[in-house]
Length: 265
Image 1 (cartoon, rainbow, N blue to C red):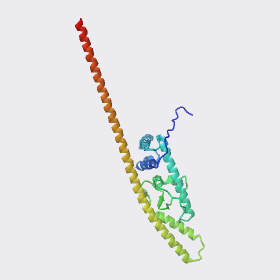
Image 2 (cartoon, rainbow, N blue to C red; image 1 turned 45 degrees about the vertical axis):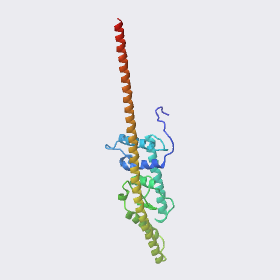
Image 3 (cartoon, one colour; image 1 turned 30 degrees about the vertical axis):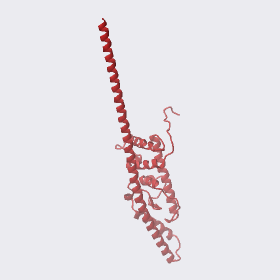
Image 4 (cartoon, helix red, strand yellow; image 1 turned 180 degrees about the vertical axis):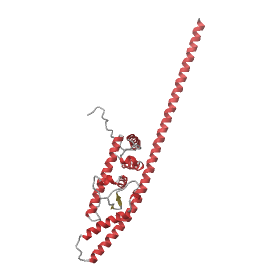
């Protein structure tokens, strides 16, 4: 092992609050979340941002203490796990022809992470289809502006095609039964679309709360740092004043001693 290898710093487990603050920071810094560099956004810029969020995350009570490289790895792991879970749910939905799948769902934090990921991040490695996938009211695929990057109608149309193709492959013996099945599927799609809209609104409100909380804690930390700096400056000034007083006292004593010596002569 090389002698200059940095020793990992660990203290405690990562809390849910730290994960939320990390995701909120990424939402507010879209260039950092992609991990791509350019003439405008350099590696140095990225490192400065990681150092900034590291200070905030390490200040969380009862949370983990890490170096900025370790927090970057945490973010990569969060994306990887959310992506894998989304792919698993999408696969289960395709197996059921767009109908109800497994009980596995995405929580709000995982949904926020998926919204932050570019489509190529979701499709390239995991082979996820470009069609929108909805499960329990959560949309998988998007970015920070999830509400504007896709529409619920597209997601519904994709499920219509999946359901129609599934039905068309079954020999039709009873036209009434097929019509009833299609009506049930349409009702299910409309219900799913409504749930997705409500879920998007909830996620948007949650993101706003994360950002407000993050900046509130950041301001509090900056105020504490400024107060500590002022206290240090005041103590330093008092110390210097004491040094001046001591030097003046010594100078006065030397003068008196000189006068006494001269008077004896």
